[in-house]
Image (tube, rainbow, N blue to C red; front, side, top):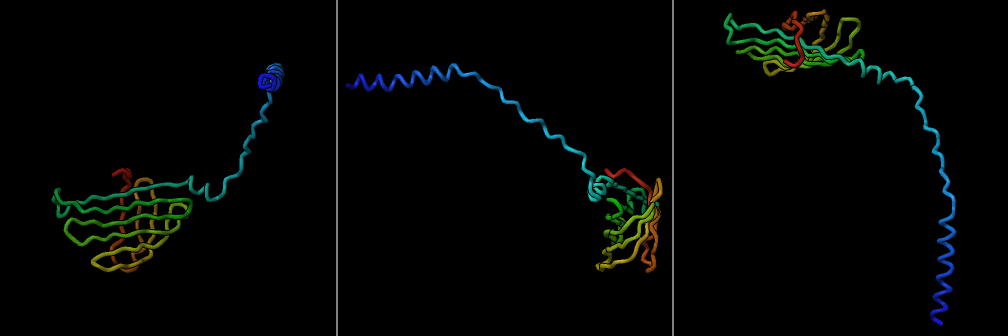
Length: 158
């Protein structure tokens, strides 16, 4: 009886395998790829692509001694019309002035504010910067603190 039951169970299995082996395989076509349409870039993305970096630096020997150098440096990042950067006066033997600039640029002129520390004091003053091909002119020294200068353009890796 066990042999009979085994045959009864095996016969449907062989029939199933035989039928499944004789089926035709159909190739299902993949759907067409979705082609991305050019979507206009937002204003923010356009501004980020317009990011520009500028570096300016003057090195002046202290009292005609080439070993001792006073440094005046300005580094600007411009994204769209927004400007940020640093403006530092780093004399060899005196108290330094270090600060940050924030503002807006229209054409080649930057108008903003300069927040700096010098001799233990923190101060914020208006600042104007005229960008030229090979230099900048820093002005609007209304408080007479000595931020005005012409600084030569340099490579930003310095």
